[in-house]
Image (cartoon, rainbow, N blue to C red; front, side):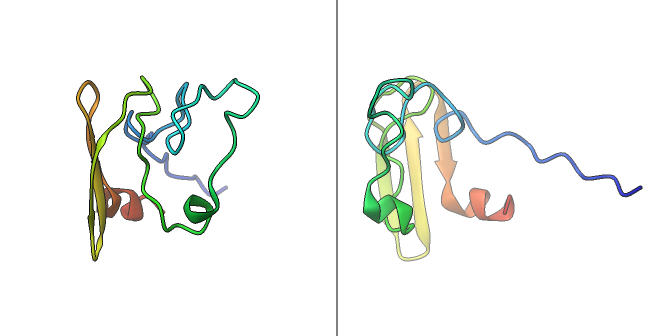
Length: 84
């Protein structure tokens, strides 16, 4: 049998949380699962923390982006690409 390596969990600001990272709406709300078209195409970085719903500081670079929640830390798109 082949063993699958465990993939580490995503960082709190963009991981599976209570809030939509693109809209800030609670995930269990009626429109909480709506993802904007630009985000579906990979053109939009997350703007809200998945854990607390706070607006994050976001910097977009030619090579990716980073987003920082004042409570849950920073995440970089380069780090997420390694997980794919």
